[in-house]
Image 1 (cartoon, one colour):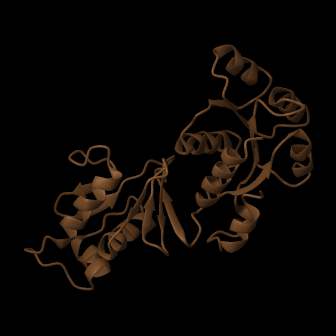
Image 2 (cartoon, rainbow, N blue to C red):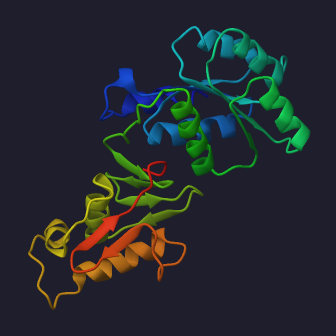
Image 3 (cartoon, rainbow, N blue to C red):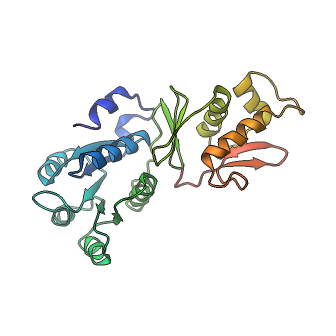
Length: 252
């Protein structure tokens, strides 16, 4: 199954396709390969799949910014393939493997892998490592989420269905008002929004001092997004000003 091509063609990226980082995902497990492709596509990257070394070399005839490479592949294994990639240049490689022994990780890094991640892994952690490797290699262009979804801190907000997806695959159907507030915050992270602005976005009216509607929406959103809603780390309250979605550079 081509997990990427049909879905990518159905999406209209905000960023010109030529500048989005191009990721080659090499894994013989169809489910994992599709999950990684879909997740990175939704985070604004361009992905191409390969199930073995032969397909990998064929795909590498096209411009590529980073390879995600499984160790245990049919035929030539990932360690040998990584050595071959490294012998031809400095293309970044992030290795993934169900083998968690420290010796395996050391061998992978010694033969030239830029990072090594053990399965099972959180998609959000893989994303963070991909970003870090691309930055170290001087490939600093950050992708934007496609126009039908917003991605932040491992979460994805579908702008068509008003559904919120966690990195673990949980799905939450948002009310219109909750959705409009999260969309406003997510489209401009680290910007303070006044209650007036959020009230107009969610309810089409200015905020009244006695009106708690915006605060109620934010409280509900924190229940979804925060590990501890009483000590929020994503949707922050800025005293006497409003709210912001606070993202570190690697989480945006």
